[in-house]
Each structure stands twice: as structure tokens, then as C-alpha cells.
Length: 158
Ligand code: FES
Image (cartoon, rainbow, N blue to C red; front, side, top):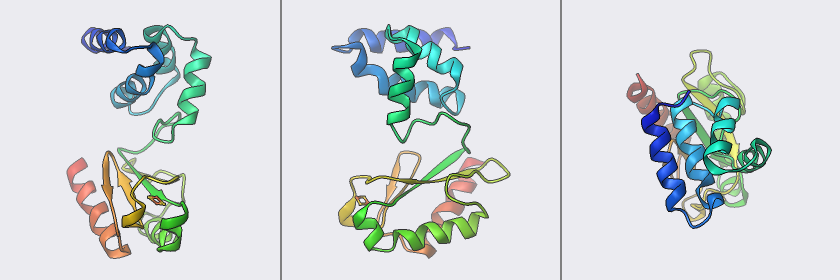
């Protein structure tokens, strides 16, 4: 259940939006931050806040790659698999991270720390290959740098 303070804040954001739909991603992201992922409860709460049906929220939630409808780790690693990153070694980067973390794409480590996900273009094609952890983009990432980034994130998340 949402704390009253967060509910009030989100109601205010929806009220300031030109249309309720404009606030959908913002509301879903805040609920996701609160619960760790967009739970069924969160979908229902988002629908109520936005004046939409849960099905409408569900449709939008499944459209956005950064909205998670399943439990994820504390840190989600998105590895771009679109054309520029693929051409610049994105596949090797994903394979390296999968080996390091002992999981496959789409999986979460047993300790609940990391989820590894392929994703579409992150808008950083000139710096391919690119990955994103949280809201931070990392470009021209070598496998060695990816390992360092992951270990820094691990320390920061503890
Ligand atoms: S193709 Fe990877 S950031 Fe655009």
C-alpha cells in the first residue's frame, strides 16, 4: 500500500499534467521505485491515480522496457542490442556480463542483486556499445569496464 505522502505527491503531479496519460510513465516509475517493480497492486493504484483502467495501465507498462512487471534485482543492467551496439560488440558484452554474473539474459542473480536485460536502442549509438544501470548510461564499454561498473554498483547497493 502506498504511503499517503507519496499518493499525495503523485496526485499533484497528475493534476499538473496536461493530460493524465502524459503522467503515466512518471507515475509508473515512482510506483516501481517504491515497490521495486510494478506489482499488480501498483498497476491498480496507478489506474486509480490516473483515472484509467488497470488494463490501460497494463498496456502502457508492457510497452516500456524500463517498467518491470516481474520482480527484478536491486540493479537492472540493460545492454543495448540494437544495430550500432550490436556492430560494436554488444553481443560479446552481454555474453561477458552473463558469464560474470552466472545468469542468462532476462535472469536475476540468486542474491537478488542484478537483473540482466537486453534492450532496444538507448539513444547513445555514437558511444556504442552502451549499457545502462539504473538511470546511468555507460558508453564505449569494454568487457573489462563492464566488470568494473558491475562491481562498483554491487558495492554501492550494499
Ligand atoms: S544502438 Fe545502442 S544506443 Fe543506439
